[in-house]
Image 1 (spheres, rainbow, N blue to C red):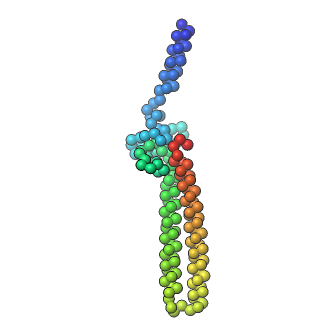
Image 2 (image 1 turned 135 degrees about the vertical axis):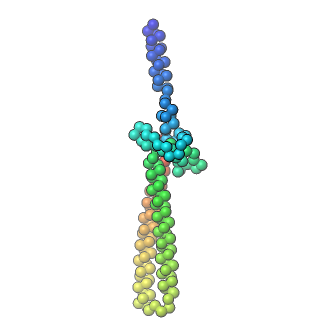
Image 3 (image 1 turned 90 degrees about the vertical axis):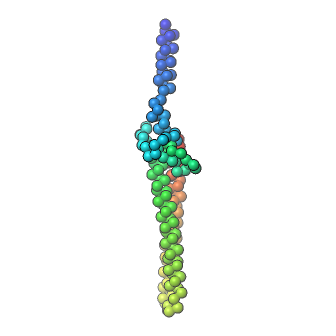
Length: 149
């Protein structure tokens, strides 16, 4: 009788422990999901049904919300970097147009040369800063979007 009760208890524990609700099974990072932008909260973490931005040919899976937030920051940073590079190019074109003016005095040309040097230094500093931030944002995104972390 004790053996039967022990066996029954062991089987009950195994069955209860082995049964996982469908919602819990589906709502794990990297598990497939159907409804895009659906949200779930498991173990204090927020998940969104979305395509993982670091996975090639991704299908909708449960992605940690931080992954999508960090991906948005990465995309914004790369856009800002591109915009600063364009501004630097426009600055160079404007400076070149002014330099071609034959009526400029020697003093004006010297001031223009200094302004060009200062402007390029400023743009290069800004571009280097955005480049560094973009690399850091990419690392954060890659970590946040790695399934299982």
